[in-house]
Length: 149
Image 1: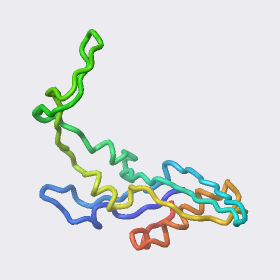
Image 2: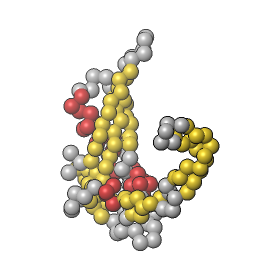
Image 3: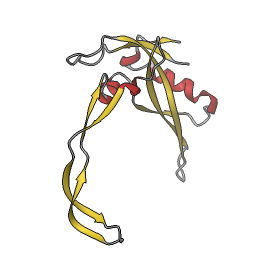
Image 4: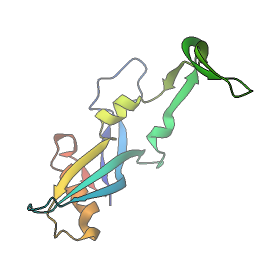
């Protein structure tokens, strides 16, 4: 079960952005939360994460987000010596980096690769949770033209 829609048409293109491609959107992870407060009706919440793959190659687009180390910087912090002594307010080297990517994590989220939450009736069978997640996605403007695949 998955959805197919154009990836790259939702976000504002940035310089040298790749052209739109067919995206394969799938529920990657799903977690449930059951809650029953005393004197109240029980409730179920389903939290799920969607990932995007390139439809033709099935390459996960998150793999195209790369981290490149930048120039190290320092900040005041706590450091432990080799002898186990804890030093306060000393200069600690901190790595700083920058993303060098075809796709940004923010852009992927705008395209639908992010987390979602829905509430379901308590009597919803567990084996229907993924189906309900896809039904929810198809109610969103972002996925209104998506095809089942």
